Image (cartoon, rainbow, N blue to C red; front, top):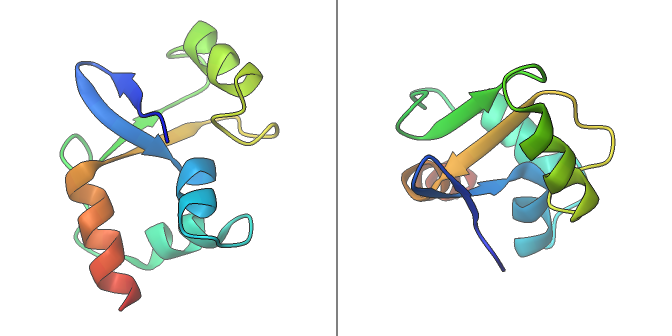
Amino acid sequence: MDFIRYNGCNTLSFRQLDALNGLPKGSTFRLFKRCAGLQEGEDYVYLAAGEAPEAIARWREAGLIYPTTVNVVLITEAGYRKLQAARS
């Protein structure tokens, strides 16, 4: 699976994480919402639609994010480890 490089950091979208873990659409998002202690800038990056519209459009066209995604959350490697621990 290809990472989404953002500000020099390897990240994955909710769509990528759902696919990577064989989960139905929305599963990683729901886990993210339940996972306390995730820190923006360390565990994830939040991009409002107006912050990076060209990048978001490219990711959508490449199938890296869900087609209906407006605001994007990108999970870092550290954030992914925390989500995995929360799933267990």
